[in-house]
Amino acid sequence: MKTARISLLPILFAVALMSQGCATTPLGKAQQTQKATAVSFDSFVTFEKDNRDQLWAISHDIKHAADKLRHKECESCPPNGQRWLQSAWNATEAYRLAKTDGNKDAMDVALDVIQKLYDEVSGYFLNPGVAGLNPNVAKQYPRAKIIP
Amino acid sequence: MTPEALLLAMRGMLVLLPFLKKEYDALTAKGEMTDEDRAQYQELLTGFKSSPAWQEEPDPS
Image 1 (tube, rainbow over the protein chains, first blue to last red):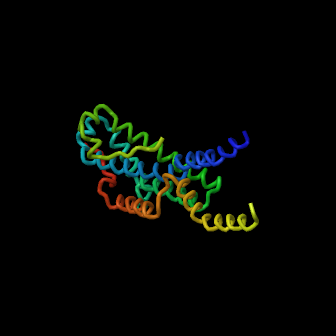
Image 2: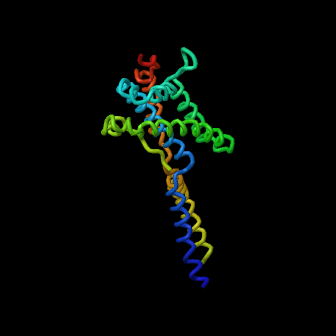
Image 3: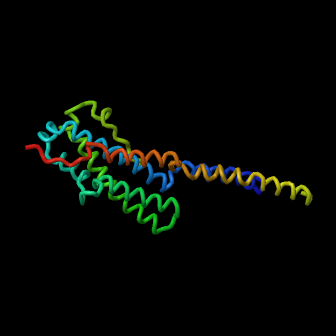
């Protein structure tokens, strides 16, 4: 029995190491989420601008959602969508450099902001009127998926 | 195990330790961006600044 327990130890260690290696770390998930969101935001504002007249006829909310990302708080400020992405990135970099609870909380809050907007933007792409507008919309305007 | 063999085994461990640590770090950093990935992401964000699609325009009449 003792022999069996000893021989199992390296296997258990390897399994533990592998299972930890297979899971995306909080930092990795945060970085991938931001990249996916950035690509989606850019696709959304581009799609809206390229198809404005048709989309305006489907729903005024689509342009207004894109304008929420484009809006600047001041003349020299970046558009809100870019500002939120940069804030999330800064918080993620702070966590990467110092993995403290406070930095993780700040990163999670910043991610929550862009995640909600990502969900909203994805919702507009799934709108039946929008989807019917161009069957190849997903190919022309790539939307990256967020890791669950 | 003789003391000599034990010492040899410990030396071997010391030699392998940096390699094992590197492998362990690589495994546990799954999904994290490399320095190159991070630089590319910053370029992506910078590219948005000059994109006309990001300019706010009045509603169509």
